[in-house]
Amino acid sequence: MEEENDGEEDETVSESDRESEHSDHCTDTEQSAAESDKDEPSTCRVSPVPTQESLRRGRGAGAAVIQNTQSITRRLLLCLISSAYSLRTFEPPPPEPSIRSSTNITEGWLPVRLNHFDASNTDTFQMRYYYNSQFSRGPYIVIYVGGEWTISPGWVRSGLAYELAERIGAGLFYTEHRYYGLTRPTNGTTVEELRYLNVDQALGDLAQFIEYVRSDDFENGRFRNARVALVGCSYAGSMATWMKLAYPHLVRVSMSDSGPLHAQEDFPEYLEVITTALRVQGSQQCVDDVESAMKRINELIETEAGLDTVSTLFNTCSRLRRSPLDLSTFFWFGITETFAYLVQYATPGDIPRACDHITNKTLGDPIDRLSSWLTSQPYTQPCIESRYSEKVASHTNTSYDSPDATMRLWTYQTCTEYGWYQTTTSSRQPFLNTVPLEYFHQMCKDFFNDSIDESLLRSAIVRTNRLFAGLKHLPDDVVSVGGGHDPWSPMGPNKTHETHLAPVYIVDGVSHCRAIRPTGSSESDHLERTKQSSLLFMEQLMTDVRSASGHTLGSRLLVLTLVVFYTMF
Image (cartoon, rainbow, N blue to C red; front, side):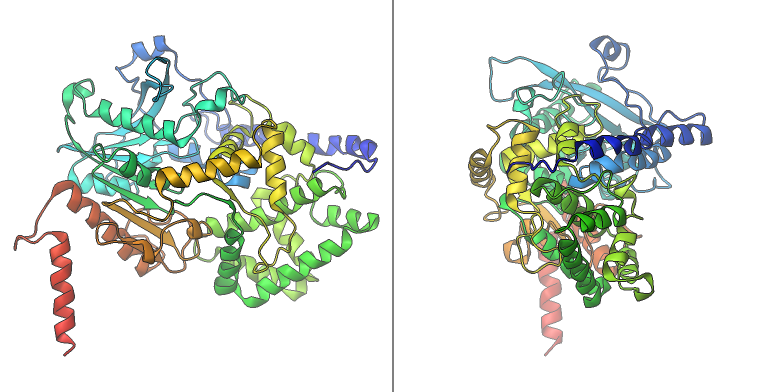
């Protein structure tokens, strides 16, 4: 796909002043935060990776007490959200700390192999993790698996993994995925340097980490030969499942919340689920009004005057142009991805409130209502970038510290392992066919190089599904949870895939990564029961605890089923 030149270079230049007003958006956030709390570090500044010398000055793994992290994390999310939301690559918002939570959370660093599959390559890099020893009293390890984000200590202070550690007396760890956050195997993120960014190597990192914690080198063998439970959500949930396939001798049980398992090039089902969520939690009128607005936008962009109107209504960073790549950039980054974030991370009331606005006729025509809602969202601030060339420029920056570094990394993984491109090719959604599959093919080539093309992608998808079985086989001793309104649910397991050793729970009405949050504060009884069932499943497998009658968990469930059956007759 070639980007058209509409002869608007002068206008684009004149718009640069408009963009410059927002160029220090994170800096303003940082300054405001600093003024409100002088004792906390800057929210937008990233600490450097520790050197070997600094590691030697600390404990063997480079311990440091982490304080004041909850407010830091919240401000960091606000700072990063505008650049990261488009592929939803930031850490799930950490829960509030448990009232029982220890303040002695340590940050550690472990040298791990750069290439786990080449014995002649002895290069290593520093892998970051957090450790909470608060409940460590038995031979158990619980690892909350990090995904395509920067880790923070909030998830070793609360959440389902924290509660499992409390129940069984386990050491609680949180690992950071290679290349993300401060775990940086290379100097930058050039295509050559990204050759070691794949799930095979990331699973190898987890395997080496588990071996280390279970060895005499960690706290004098405190967890020697301990049993291991993994908990993960989203892509990290996929990893938790795949670890049971790749390294079954190292992991006793895994929990995957919202983990996609089937790699697929075109993923139109994503927007279909979003449409269902808008209809069920909002109304059919909400879906109809979005579609009416999209049709009006498509009519307007056929004329120069209409392009001006759309640019003004939707607060684009520069005047919208009628090039296919620019239009798809506007529709994807500006519209479909805003709805994606709304639904994927919905909490109770979010979707009804959005639909109330979109269907409120006192606010004008459908296009006026859609534009006023979209432009009020934090994800479209300070303006909607519609120029494909700007997206390419920001995502070809190979510095780890660039604003779009995380999205560059995750895009590379989708281009070389998974696909999962959320196109508008389905007729069962209101966004019309505005973002075709070819847009993502072009993005892969332009973000990286021409060798990262659709042929490589298709071969990689076949390999991923062949290696990890897609949805054809769930490994034993894995509990999988999905949300009924999670847009990722079509790529994950459902009830037809479960076995008696691999239960699957689908929670009505909830979205992405809701089951890893603490018990007792669930938005529905169904979700609360699912959390409790998942905890019980993992606890049973980790401890082999039997009831007073000597029955295992499976036996107790069988007896309960028989009792219910006979009482019916």
